[in-house]
Image 1 (spheres, rainbow, N blue to C red):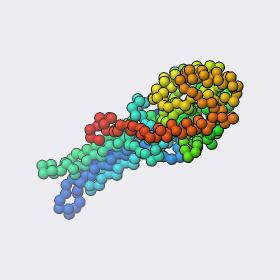
Image 2 (image 1 turned 45 degrees about the vertical axis):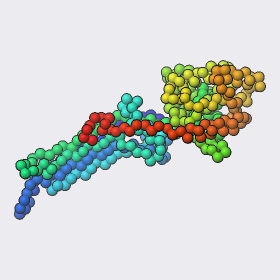
Image 3 (image 1 turned 45 degrees about the horizontal axis):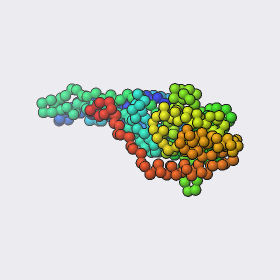
Image 4 (image 1 turned 180 degrees about the vertical axis):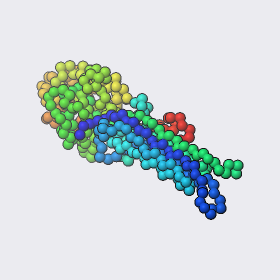
Length: 351
């Protein structure tokens, strides 16, 4: 299945049904008068996080969704049926943005969360509603209110506890396949990883999810390589595991390149705890290791872990450090986004 993490969708809630203009005209009925019923309410548009989905691929082939229009009112005070709602089913971790792709409407982080994003129009009143002592035969009714047209962006951000970052071929996918049951594509050429991958790691009694994203290169925030859009999948993580390959000639430059791209991307990634690792150390002798560790410490101010997914050196220590940072992050609850209401956002006081 193709991985798709962003989609533009057009939705419209249902129009309200019109009220009816009707009068009783049965034979042998002593009192006649207006008996037009109200129109039904138009259907709403909802977004719901459901199980069994891990991509937005369904919205590549269908982008237009419309809720049902309310049924018009009828005579004999028969009210029209309300229109059926429509629900857009998305994976957990999906954010819904307004047309500007910046205003957050809702963030569905758990399966079962549901949000109304467009309210259906109210049904119109029938002429029975307008009768009075001075107007006993009203001949007018209200039309139904129109529904809302919205253009929204769906953006999927994977739910993970830890994120792997680094240059291409830094050993991220190899690390993920070694410490989890994930089986990402691994090869000796850049950009082997084209889509984010997830794996569940265990250490002692701790269990957590690790996200692997495509490698970053210098200028990724300007679209160089495959860009930095996939960094959105590590925005929710508690900690970043930054891998710098021991095969890099200048490990300090490699480290600063990735940190620069994280800073250019923003969204608080540079504020997250970072565990720095010198990876693929099985290819280095003792002298080369010491030299590159010293260069990394000078560039970052941190002592890097020595890591090799092939020889399994340093894996246990890295997992323990990740588990510790994740546990600390879970103790601090995230701030909930502000409430968004379609009636306030679109200035309709009658909704």
